[in-house]
Length: 114
Image (cartoon, rainbow, N blue to C red; front, top):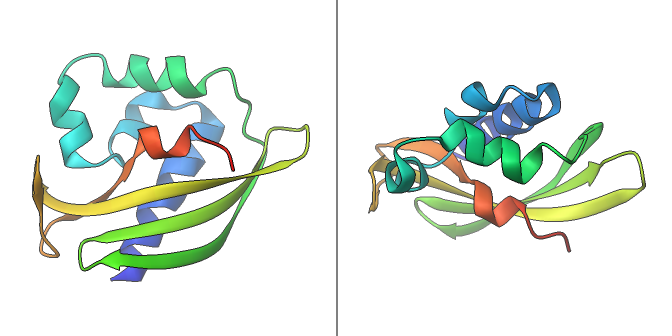
């Protein structure tokens, strides 16, 4: 299960680095995608586009619940390393956490550096 959560954050970060906002949306959680419906890629560009992600490394994965993980990531924008805590949630649909669903990153959780 943690492998799938880890894969979701890795794909999210890979596409952030590439500035591929449309593909980045695919690795966000269902609830976040469903809340906005339109302009999700543009929203990600507005939030993450000014930060040139150069490197990243997963530090640890914490179990929050059966369908939720907090993944701590060191990120480097070229000005030193910062840490973020990405919340990754498994859902069968918006507001439906379930281990039978798909893992996705809550992008809002990635905005705050620790």
